[in-house]
Length: 305
Image (cartoon, rainbow, N blue to C red; front, top):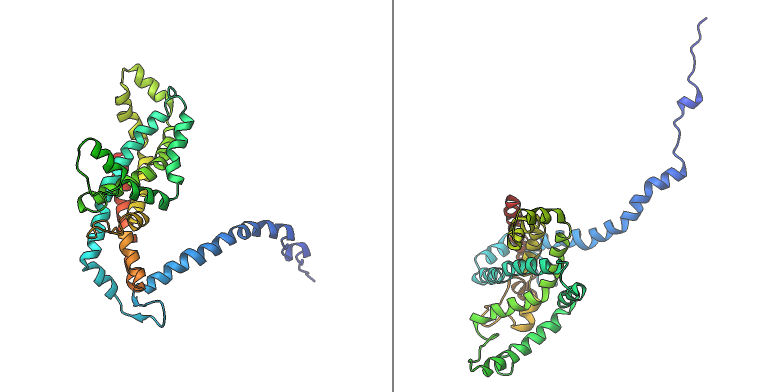
């Protein structure tokens, strides 16, 4: 009579993980859960809600009326919308190229071992960035007032005529650009300075042995090796310029003649009129525009890299 061997009890029963192993496996998810919950509540849900709102006509109360692509059609055929984008584009040209060039030059000087009191200069450059923007904008209004401003008072000493810095379309954008440059250039200098400190000094020593001048070293070594840092700074400031709101709001109120109505300030106008559906569509168009510009600059600078 043949008998079959039965599997042992230890092999037939699967070993259950201990409580300690379960806790160890669950620990990362427990630590990440608060961030995920906050991200879903304050980023993902508002984004989805805004996307849906952009296809409706809603004044903040009552039921939202579904109108399809009417908000996008209105904006894309609105001269005011394109004018706001044009104003932001001009401000970008007045700010970002100058700021990047200035930040690279100043960062190179601050990184020099021969410069005395480097720490004091670094703090001095970052102070404008941490100063409240509204306070700086109010100072700008006082400085550039046409009748009582200090800038025109200095021009009068040299016999020069008064300039309507904030009241003429010709000078209002450069005045805003100067405010933005003064406020944020220090932050970009710190970013570029961090990129400079990652460059190996042996490259400069080899260049000196080959007889390269300081200017040649800057152009042939520093700038190419800083290209990724510059790319990051350009994308960051592109976002900031097209979102610019507080500067025109406090200094010029979008004037004169809407010459300083930036894309961010134009978006605010929809909120003041409780036209939330159009405002949501406007915000999505800005997101798409900034994404396209950022990808363009990334590809352009990466090609040079």
